[in-house]
Image (tube, rainbow, N blue to C red; front, side, top):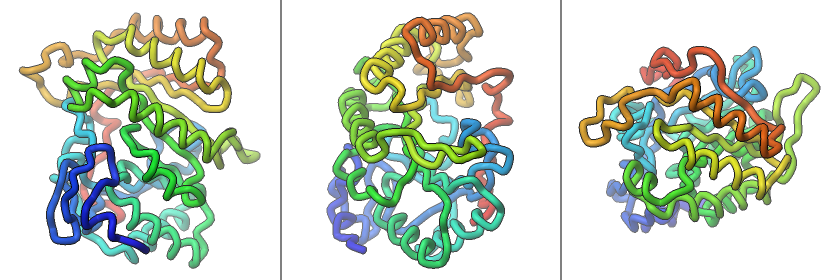
Length: 300
């Protein structure tokens, strides 16, 4: 596997140009050493991913986006996790398969793409046969995603913002939509149609998630409109209401509340009105801290 890209790292759109092989870190807070915070069955993904057995989630430490409201901020900031070898990562994939996971779900994997590719090659040579899910923020380089063709079966990106103002304010990347739109285009090129098995579990395809933020209902509508007008039924759209203010924001007081049931219902009505059929919605108490897993090194 070629790790030369990590000597002058431009894996993500931040293009930090640091030498991660020499222990330097950029925006994602990661050197070339793999750090994983949790590897376990996860029951709270979309139904076609979790099923009854669970999705085999591997949470990587560090993040190239770093939203101020991140629910997984402990690992996003590189504050939690255990350093492991590429060989151990391959073993983790196989252990999750032995636990009857429906897939291998790589959570925030962007900054470890070369290492993950090698681990998947090793694991597949030893019998890994599960679909691979690439679970990311959407802030991805299309060039990096091209490296993953043949490795990833299901893309699970966010599309967080349509307008540059909230993107700059909350994630320090006013170019978020332009970058994410190109990334999703590449994902759909690789996986142009959803494929399910006889149990209804997704084997291939693209699910785009959108987390509705308080006060940004119109931006959310524009995102749903863009996705449906651009891709129609080629993708699934997962409209999420689970935003939880786990951090008390003094600089962003507008984020210190959950979205209301009325706001979410209005967004659902809008999606239905424009014709969205391939979609997922959230019902019940999904916006609770208890739905955020503990990053205690389980399974690592």
